[in-house]
Image 1: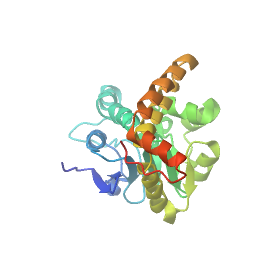
Image 2: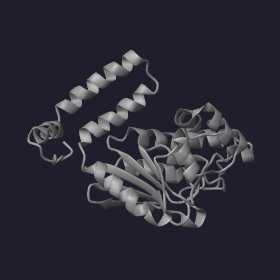
Image 3: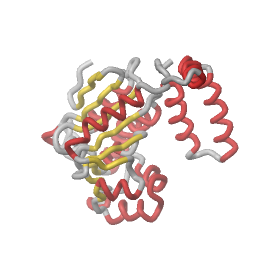
Image 4: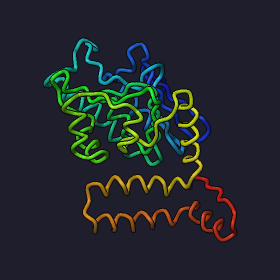
Length: 260
């Protein structure tokens, strides 16, 4: 399948998705969101996902320009775009059965900020920044930002980002616990790929189950989270990787996980 706004590449066990509208700072029209969802449905036997942007931006937000004869800004247009394109993309990213690494190579604004924070590990170039730009144009956060940000950085800092509409640099984002790591610009691509490869060579069933357990636990009471963990442990315990991991531990050697 060919794409117009993204690239889907395979690097060994890692599926790499590249936002590919550099001339628009990777602004994300609804069609791009649909293409990202389509790419996530084509992972095959990939054991990790790496998502990044082409050029000098990660994603400058939704493309508010007229697209296909219609603008997505305002009222019914924005509701349709969110419910049919952007929200399904964010949900699908949260539900893929393998780890997700996101490399933020430049500005991540609006829905691009939501996308940047929707993975398991977010690395950002030190020159990058995160921006909840909505209030600056009289809109409200979307793409899951009002759910994601308070859970990552607390209500006070989330309100600061969303109500003041000011940039948060990569190093500040790391200090706040909003992202995994801020790295030198020149090192971002290699470090993000190395992390994705490390995860891809891990116990895929366990890692996929773990990310789903954490997602469910964020909305569950303690008893439900405990039960979810027990169910997930049963699933992971039946995997070939668990058998290999236990055998390697007993034999005092490094495990050779196959993702099964």
